[in-house]
Image 1: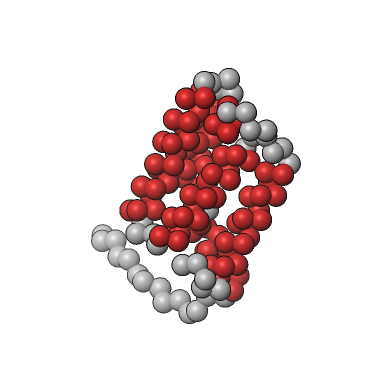
Image 2: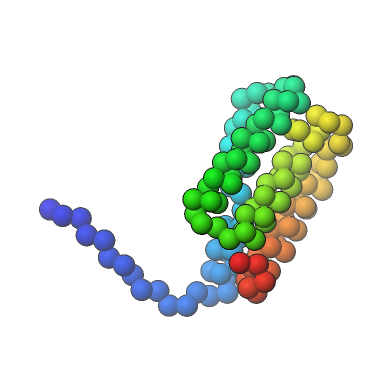
Length: 128
């Protein structure tokens, strides 16, 4: 018995499919997930240096994944910005270790607003 792969031809994507694909392309899920796991491992009371290390390792994974995927420069930049917003919006981490106030409920607004703007710009072909 042999395994065969069949390539399915798809027609043009709908605007909704394009928007979802653009959102997923610019969303730094791998880095954010790793960052959350790292924060959980080191704890909320960790030294600022440890929190920075967790953020930098997570950022490194983000950059590696985007590089291996041959992402465009714009995609890399928008993903890095999104990750930094996530790190700040989560409320405890390197930003708060250096005295910046947590954003509480405003963090969710920042994440959604940024993701929406990037998705719209990507759907229009302004960001690729």
